[in-house]
Image 1 (cartoon, rainbow, N blue to C red):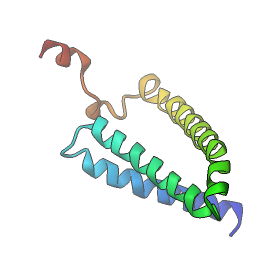
Image 2: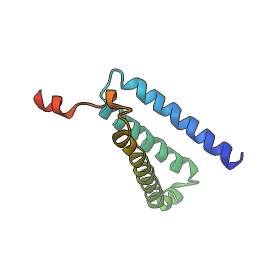
Image 3: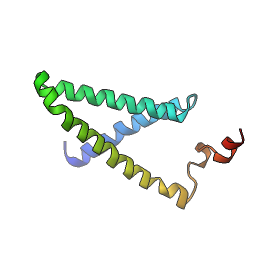
Image 4: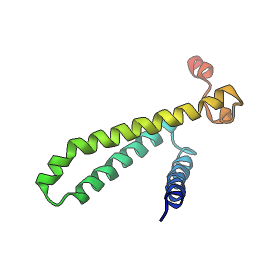
Length: 108
């Protein structure tokens, strides 16, 4: 598999998780869905680390590096996506219908 194919597969898999999350937001608060997705990511990432370790000693030796890797990757990806969403506010309110009106929440 070349880099382009790997990137395309990566995006397709990510989009499939986002599709599931979007379906959950139809009847569940975005914050709960986000937290559940984040928890699932942490749980699966821990599984990946554990499944790649040959024994407990290797697992413990790899633990801090894994935490650093996953947290730095999450931060990088979050920053990239937050930067991408700036256009929502600058160009056109593409997702305005999905965003809660802060003024109406304060009135309640």
